[in-house]
Image 1 (cartoon, one colour):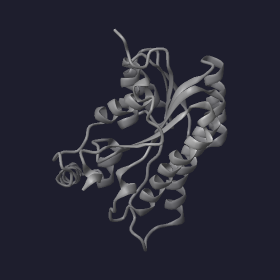
Image 2 (image 1 turned 180 degrees about the horizontal axis):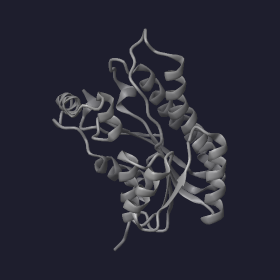
Image 3 (image 1 turned 30 degrees about the horizontal axis):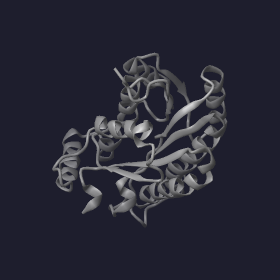
Length: 251
């Protein structure tokens, strides 16, 4: 069977749960040698076991530049190159204008902007000619959401990275694309509603009501789109933002 990612070395950051973990599983099924990162060892070990296929897990905080250096030294020693880089690590929290703190700003931009920037920049010596770089954006960058302005701004910055980096990297034919999920049933999303199960379900129901398809997405659906961007099927897709959102950002 011809698999879409055979013989590709793929790194997915922030892949111990949610979309990152779903993508890692799908990449492995499509033939890639998968390397994942996470900040907590127990969750990292569990994710590696769930992925199988000789996946490798390395404990890294993508906002720590020294840790990124160690990550790429390890990949260089073990694999020699990267064909796919899915810079997925990130996150954020909700605070309305008037309550935003320096700590919240620094945390969100550190994870989503600084982390993404240096995850990609420090990978450049390892990226093969024609490699695929995938950045995690968000529909939040294209629409308004109460109390979500800092997160939205950080994801708008990520989208801007892709538009500019394709010019910086054109001589190496490295493609850089952004995948922007809509509301997706992940631990990171439901935890925005706190620990109460009823409140979490209420959040999911509300978000589903705002989506033309009438439901939130599943991590596996985002993962399938990531496989497309990682594979040669998207060989002429560059600098694009692929919305996987049930139409959420289109209305």
